[in-house]
Length: 210
Image (cartoon, rainbow, N blue to C red):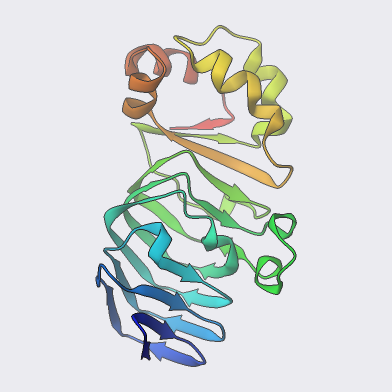
């Protein structure tokens, strides 16, 4: 449905479809009451134009053609067996009911999803088991259970500003945070260090996937 520049896909179940979200001047609303199975969703719009509300994605592939930045609305979706490709930064996935009081925040989940072909930076899994997730390999790296492991991670010297700015503040992450993934080249630029210096410390910990 196209209404006043808004493209609304709701109250239906789609299977084996390819959806291209590419209209630069449109807002895309996925849900409520939307189920996609074995679909390919091509994202070519910024986070501000992608709104998800009580949508369920099963065995879908997301092809992110334009970097998706600071998109928290994945926590309003149920993601099962999905694959992500492309660049995502500052995005949250999973179950985070404390994020807001609206019903959609109570329904988010993620399991058996594959980010191995994605580039994640500052992305979190919330309130869901990260053991079911395939994370991207180096140059991405993922802190598992970062809040509980924060004292251990603070116990070594990290290069550049990364220790002071990021590692020392892991305990302040929201309580549902189960994993936190960064992109080493981006971190190295922001934190005045190098990929090699970061990796030398990362390799000391079994709570970091890389």
